[in-house]
Image 1 (cartoon, rainbow, N blue to C red):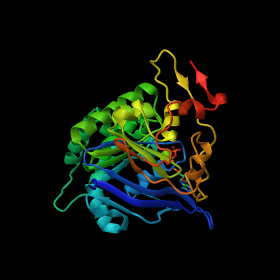
Image 2: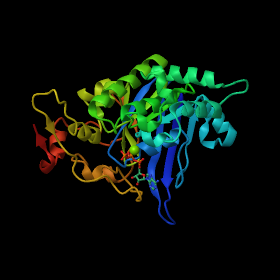
Image 3: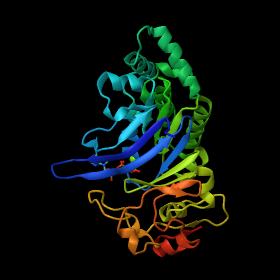
Image 4: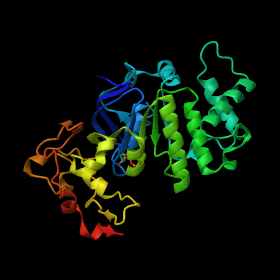
Length: 340
Ligand SMILES: Nc1ncnc2c1ncn2[C@@H]1O[C@H](COP(=O)(O)OP(=O)(O)OP(=O)(O)O)[C@@H](O)[C@H]1O
Ligand SMILES: [Mg+2]
């Protein structure tokens, strides 16, 4: 069954200059159900943000969709433009980025930000007055645990955590049914990260919007989400219920990512780096793009591209499928191993 958000065969390329092509998202199929909270992880540069931009139709040149379809509640949004897209966006989808300061206009008060967004997407019959904007802005700030007096402040008068809460409140202003959170807490200190993440979790639980959380922090993602998507070199290579990830994954890359994550409460934490580097996305590559870094790779892995196929309660794109129990220690580079 198709989800609220559904992608089929989505490809995104960046063409930063003549002749240069970077295939950042490749042949992605995914479905995000109504009210589902899904995590998206993978090493830097593997295409997570690009996929988030594509799903919310916020991709900017030199990036462009190069085939595939993206539907939102049954409407193909990949082909919409102008007023049709604005109408979908009004009640549809929002994107929350990492740095609150960049998303806010330094010379406008927070109250003005709410006014701008509400008026820009007003429907026929909406009559936003200063008083009604302040009321709605105050309510939205309350949802992210800020006081209404923040409406009169400028962005530079707020802490990083408060700014990020404001950005989340602005994203909620149009009551979206789908929100992409692209590393929403990365720029914050650890305690504030936790508090903002808790706010996101409780908003999602109470408002039941569909959420895609992009993060490097596997621990946070596993704690918050229902399902985990793992991306490598532009492709989704594993899709698994988050609750089952710590008890066993199928793709050797997911296993290697787990090796980079240590539970600080454990008495002994074994961390393993992933040897090598992700591939250059300007080459198309024939087979599994992880094969060069994979301790389990065999001849056939380089012949054709593995497609996502059912594996346990999830899906995996790997010819070897289930890594041997000791795959993690085999694939680890002793030079990057650390022990505490
Ligand atoms: N504006 C751009 N112009 C050219 N290439 C780009 C542009 N933005 C991204 N890319 C390319 O697309 C690839 C994927 O980038 P993307 O930002 O989606 O990765 P990411 O997984 O979000 O990384 P990170 O975890 O560091 O945020 C990058 O390797 C980069 O080469
Ligand atoms: Mg990114």
